[in-house]
Image (cartoon, rainbow, N blue to C red; front, top):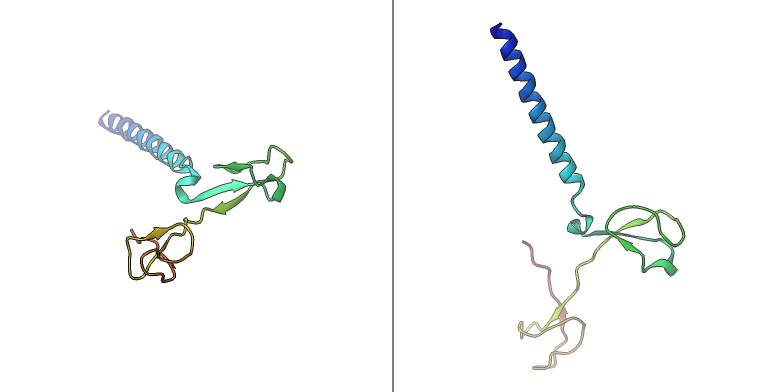
Length: 107
């Protein structure tokens, strides 16, 4: 009798842990691809405006969407004036030096 109760308890615990594990796996699978820097787009250049956060088919031509990695936006700064920041290459307005690409933050 004691063994039967213990057996039922272990089965119940196993069911609960299995359910929790499955929920955790589902949550990991549903993490938005954009959180990983990925997006999906049509390989046809004329359909470059088709952008999705999950794999699928292009709604315009039906081709499989392809994964692309989002490149971080490059910013430029002056080596002598780090407070000068621009989204394009050019000259520093304070000293005239060439702006150089900023190194991405390592966090």
